[in-house]
Image (cartoon, rainbow, N blue to C red; front, side, top):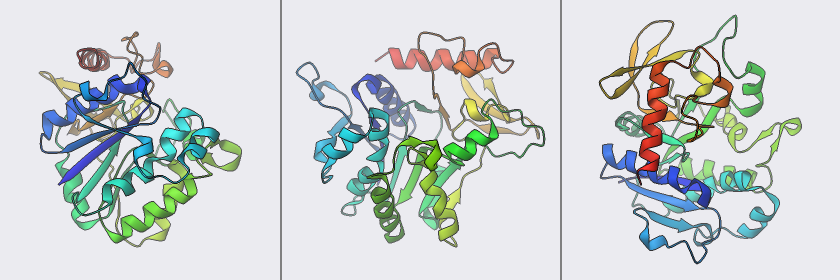
Length: 288
């Protein structure tokens, strides 16, 4: 079996439910879990939600309140990610475990990731895939060096001994080093995963397919087109079309559908297709 989880505070719950709906539309057999990083209050009835919600205190993290005390909510939600992987790897129920940020929407099947995990124990996606002499991205290249080559809004592990070792190593790093502290080379959990590429001869797959983890930071190399209601991704250099597997709506404001992200205001990338994508995501998120 396969499972997917996301981590949210209560203010992001609508996004998590929308992610869950998008997963169930293409993979009804996947188990989907929402990890709740803050406390449940009297007005929040877990039983009324349509996906299983697990409170952070139920994950078995030693001294998790220490993490909650020293990190802000974003850092804390990120710091518990490897602990969640460890939780779902306990026993042998799940063969593959995938994490998605709550602001991601799944448009097509994740079968390729399943297939890649047959021969690899980890799959990650880079922030972008093209080298450019004259950089055209909205995010400066040196910012990517600071925030990490790989975007961990998505990461997948096979339930294996290599995975368990890496996750144990990762969680120990994030107990104290999951801050945004650029002077120390820290940006949440992302930079740590770069060590894996140099530490394993094989088993880490870098998924460069342009239809995966599309976001504002790589729209300079990809464009969105529609075939009916289905979005496709066109690689701008080669003009090859790819299925849009999942889109990462990082920084999206449901109250402003004219932009994919504030960095793209008054930007030529704000074409009709991007606006349609935003509107579709917004309607899905509001129609709960």
